[in-house]
Length: 51
Image 1: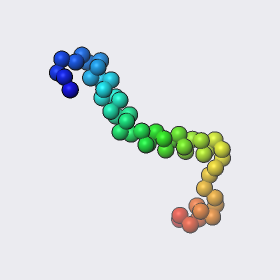
Image 2: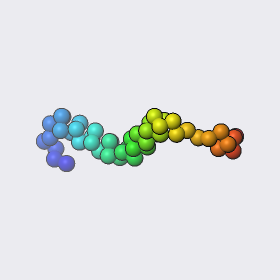
Image 3: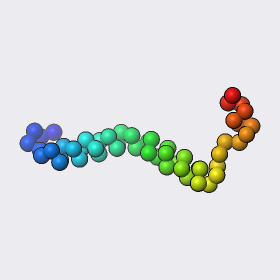
């Protein structure tokens, strides 16, 4: 990275790198929201098996 970049550029690069690194989490959250919206929850028998 060049040392003469302004603060806005550096912050934008850092934010983009962070979002890229955690993109999988964002996708999992979106998928979970879509499943909840579709009322696609764990069955009672599955919940009992987890106990």
